[in-house]
Image (cartoon, rainbow, N blue to C red):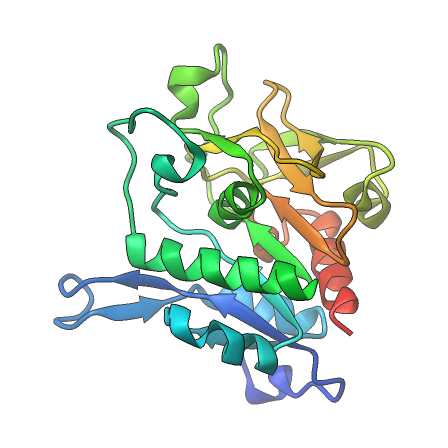
Length: 247
């Protein structure tokens, strides 16, 4: 079957996954404001057994969106969560905001949490999830983590950047079935602290938090890397487990 062909998205189980989109104002690619999402998010979810549906940024429509889908995947992007949302006193000069997207994603995640719907946060999506759950963020890793790894890799994203140590007896550990896995890395921020009821499920060699989860929820998990690139078998296992939880 050709990659990206319509047959890839015919899922007899109808496990529908809502994905958040990135957004830009007019300029560059288009003379008008536009939404975008990398193709591999949808293809990786389809390979895992899900039917991907992309969700425009309408916070007032969150309840209707959640009625239509079985789970939520909060994607990454080249922007940051507003530091005021986690109680920071200032904003690092590197921080780039997209208020409309953040407002929508917070409403979507909070709505899904209320319904105990499965949620997977990827990279910036993990950071958004952490803040929604009462955690805080490192605003710029090079300035806050002495001896930090290069978390914004200069090699292709389908190649590993570093390993992470998986926390024993977590949901992530059960899914990937390895104490350490190789991951890609494309972020300048990270989770600093987790909220009540959350646990850290993966840590980089420099101590940077690479994964979080809330055990009391049906499936509520975030990872700092991008499993949609399929860097290791653990990535496909994670996406399959997420889709399975949405049944």
